[in-house]
Length: 150
Image 1 (spheres, one colour):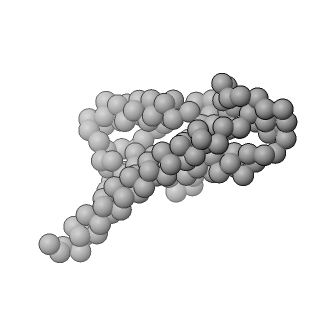
Image 2 (cartoon, rainbow, N blue to C red):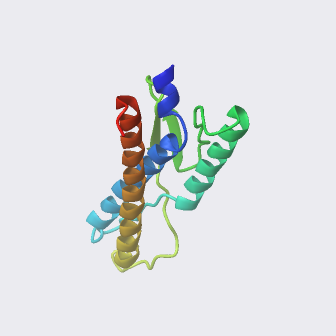
Image 3 (cartoon, one colour):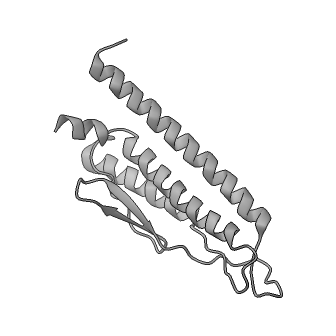
């Protein structure tokens, strides 16, 4: 199908996956910040490097299979992130956050680190913004091409 080829081409699925990961990671970080003073609460995290490595592998695999930047993007599952295709064939990321180590355990058995959480949140918001801005630009280019305007 022509439209499917446009939507699954170039960087579109990569940007979509990156935005989905950033959104899921933001949910986890916001949950951590909301429970910063909850006794016995252990923070959760999603490993960025593992996801980036799996995404890079999927891009390389797609290039080898299809001879370019076309075709489905199959992201290999990790311990924390699982990619599932819905009925329409779109990738949906399911997450199972892990627990980080290295934080200080406070007297209330909480391993909070507000400064690190806020820095991670700022980084995640920035990566989501970049992915969605690039995705929006890509969609505007497609819209211009389809409507045959210059």
